[in-house]
Amino acid sequence: SQKIEQNSEALNIQEGKTATLTCNYTNYSPAYLQWYRQDPGRGPVFLLLIRENEKEKRKERLKVTFDTTLKQSLFHITASQPADSATYLCALVNYGQNFVFGPGTRLSVLP
Amino acid sequence: ETGVTQSPTHLIKTRGQQVTLRCSSQSGHNTVSWYQQALGQGPQFIFQYYREEENGRGNFPPRFSGLQFPNYSSELNVNALELDDSALYLCASSLGTGVVETQYFGPGTRLLVL
Image (cartoon, rainbow over all chains, first blue to last red; front, side):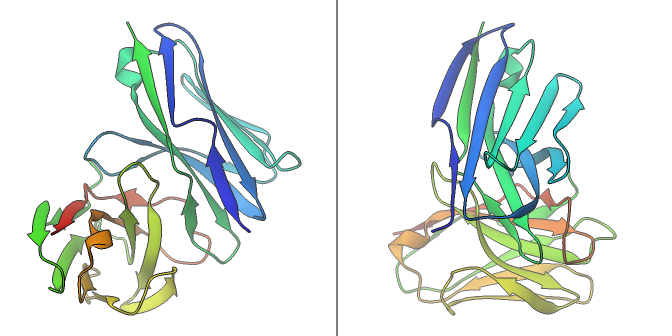
């Protein structure tokens, strides 16, 4: 069956460290994968997109990798800050289909 | 802010009732997708509307229906509400259809079914 999993429900890290979040999928062949940030009571906000033929994308303190052999994406936040505390969602899109979201990982950056 | 608005922000209904949720898409966007997000879970795709026609549907029963208007705003209707329909309902707007790379979410409508 098709499944998207994110490494853990919650992740606590110390301010200044790098947060690494994992998204694994089975029985999908995504055209691309996205990462979103969601704050409590708000809609998700788009952060980064990576296509199936790309290995890595960067945007300021954010970095995403995509390994279609391992069927995994890693999302890194370097020099993390308390303001980075939120739930992070991965979403993948198969060709001709719509977005499928993972369950999310709640990140807490401790001062 | 994304420019996508939803109303109402919160709603309480009882089992068996019907509800209509509304979404105004971002200026210039002609596609609206609706999602249901239960507490602690990721959004689940309900359906998408493109130029006033349904353009894809997730695994939701027929009592979930929708409309898109000529100005590309949209409604989600849910009939015969069940307790499990309690969730955050999100709409997202985008431009075009097919492999849409970016969509912009509204703040959501929190529905509680008692």
